Amino acid sequence: MVRVALVRCPDYDDRNVGPAVDRALGLLGGWEAFVPRRARVFVKINHLSPPSPPGQGIITHPAVAAAVIARLKEFEAEVIVGDDIQSPETDGFSVSGYREVCRRLGVGLINLKEDGFREVGLQGARLRSVYFARQALDSDLIVNLPKLKTHAFTAFTGAVKNMFGCIPYGARLEAHRRFPRQDDFSEMLADLYAHRPPRLTVMDGIVAMEGEGPAGGPLRKVGLLLAGGDGVAVDAVAARLIGFKPGEVLTTAFAQDRGAGVGDPAGIEVVGERPENAAPAEFKHSALAMGLLRKKLPQTIYAFISGQLVLIPEIVPVPCTGCWECVKICPTGAARREGSKARINGPDCIHCMCCHEVCRFQAVRTRSTPLGRWIKAGGEIARRLGVRL
Image (cartoon, rainbow, N blue to C red; front, top):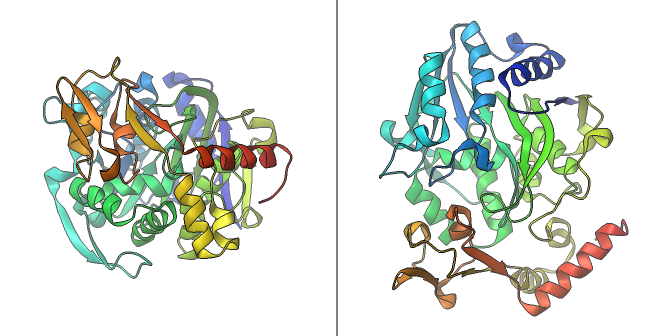
């Protein structure tokens, strides 16, 4: 039985975040249960590109990171904070507030590409080798700080998905090309997570993102922090809080299959707040999760249904600013310049939603096929009626 702490935190005021983090770790046996003195600790934040200020709810809020870092320093830890980000025209860490936080606390802050990556062998279902961040490999332990958000491709993003940032930008684009289906992509993420599972996960759920996350969805004040030594279990608890059923979040299911953590609620003890009292009502999902159907339907039928459920991205001309971030991140070249606006060429699109993830101006909308809309509507009716698919 693994433990996940669930505590309330009303906002990002330092006077509230620090005590909430301490309460969470106290419920888990204290910081000493996770961090030996003078350890080298890599703190993996969720810092999407292009950079955004914390108020947009896209990144792990620096106030949460600051509270964690302050406690790590009390154990004389050598702390490096980082993520692999793309911001060639500006200092992305200054935009997000991380530059100031790390300077104030006297800890290192690194764009992972600056320190490089090392090839490692994997025994994964999808990956046999990968280039992994040196900082993550050479640290004594990893502290993972994901953000509670929905995701337009994987349905949910949390502790498992956050470790995707430990591989190079080019490798992430290649992964979208190689694994365009949700289940294959989720298996790949589980392969990565299982190679170097974090020792501690603290999830920022104070302000979450619902709907078409992880960058374009509406914000939702949830007022919670989650923590645990098992990041897969933290994801499982977080996903159930926002309305997913066990097995629907494929990254959690596959990570458990790898032996990288516990995703089954029967093996998880939630301490602190009772989930049924803390869960937000009617939290909006991006799309119908297909985990249970994937396991029950013949492969050919599942492939057809999942093909109808893909989200098709389109550029909305009026809010498009011509920043070309979608063009730069598109792994297939489907997003391209057309005059002063971007355009997505449908036949080249693999529905990875990278363009949607990177747009900060709500200029990338998504639509479903007509049949896909019927399938999702049926799934939503079944969910509301409590019918297990």
